[in-house]
Image 1 (cartoon, rainbow, N blue to C red):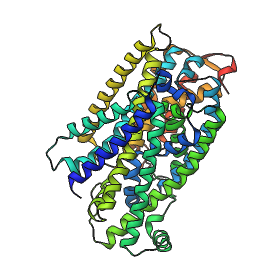
Image 2: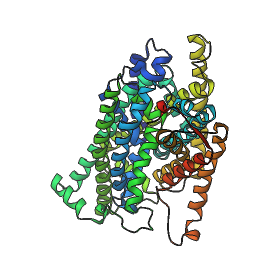
Image 3: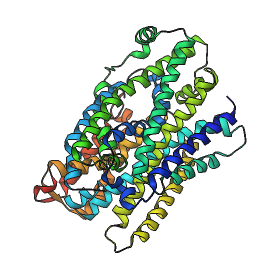
Image 4: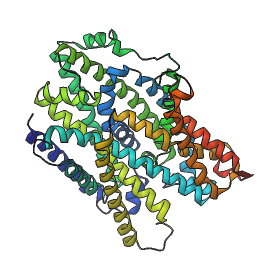
Amino acid sequence: MTPSLLLTCVVVYSAVLFLITYLTSRNATNETYFIGNRSSKWYLVAYGMIGASLSGVTFMSVPGGVGPQHFAYFQMVLGYMVGYAVIATILLPLYYRLNLTSIYSYLLQRFGAYSYKTGAFFFLLSRVIGASFRLYIVVNVLQIFVFDEWGIPFTVTVAAFIVLILLYTFQGGVKTIVWTDTLQTTFMLLAVVITIYLIGKELNFSITDMISNIKNRPHSAIFVTDFNDKKFFLKHFFGGAFIAIAMTGLDQEMMQKNISCKTLKESQKNMFTFSIILFFVNIMFLCLGALLYLFAAAKNIAIPVHSDDLFPTIALHFLGPVSGIFFIIGLISAAFPSADGALTALTTSFCIDFIGIREKNWTEKKQVQVRRVVHLCFAIILLLVIVYFKTSIKESVLNNLFTIANYTYGPLLGLFVFGLFTKLQVRDKLVPVIALFPPTICYLLNTYSKELFTSYQFGFEMLMINGLLTFIGLLLIAKYKIHPKVSL
């Protein structure tokens, strides 16, 4: 495929997004931007959340990771199902009962202002890094296959994408994102299905042949039984459950879409439907990865140094123009839901949690002006972080993303668990200090695990350890019992 054709795909796709933006953002208010006037259709939210959850990281890293890690990722997928059930049955009822716009307002009611700001800060940190990772992997592919040939610097490419996302989320917020996520999820899944079909056609595989070849190859191995291995089953399973709880249930971006549904019942239907669809979509991504490695072996294609590059290499160079077009559209579709939702959620959290935009005696016009400035500032921050990643990322982006999540979501996990499952109050002013220690301890444990624990390697259980350390720290500064209205 020529760079011009690839760029044309990007332009046409972006034009469709702007059309949706125009149709959904007319007469938008701050309530439209923050929670979609609580009028989102649950089935649209459930379907659109697939794209937001998977992102460009999953689109590239899960298929590529099948080579070195086989189907071990599926152990985490099993854990996700448990985590999503916890969100639907415990967290969503709490958010609706308290009528929250920012979910971190719960910490204000439960503990106080310092705890509230601490939780919101860790979300901002987590989401800036996470959204930057997700967008980086997409922009980097387009840079390598399109813009490098034209001599356009990486920074300019990133800036162009940030501007696109900035423009179509500037006005409509959540209401717009619910609809654009639906479109983007559709194209992302189409890209995977078409790639699987084309690989099967090239290898003369029927559906039965595909299943048989995947099943009979080492790539299909799921369970890891070595306790010391990072991919040990229990580490991945429980890590997946807590990652789902933290990165979805305690994440303003993901919950902002859920609480935009009319009622708790609809929001719960959304969460359960989303989790079931996501389960099968992840299986499809893993099967795609196995087929990519089978195709590479059959056609004597050299496996790239970075496993994330395998999917784009085969889709753009070995499967014809149809594959290339749908890959690029699918990749963009996987990336945009992460970045647009992140910008909206970051703006919402900062405006409500730090500026206190609803408590100030400002006109609607003034609030909109402030919100837009914040929106623009976070777009610039994402740009700077992505450019930094270009020089620092050396391994699979998926591994980097979950590693960072282990550190940044741990304090959030500990705060919410302590608030929900105890009736104790804490010395609120000490919470920011307490929250800093667990990530630091976890980082040291992870760095020196081999020296401290012989051959043991920490995996995704680090998030649980981080949350547990935060919980213990809160116990140390606990002082008295409170009214149970904001606990379970």
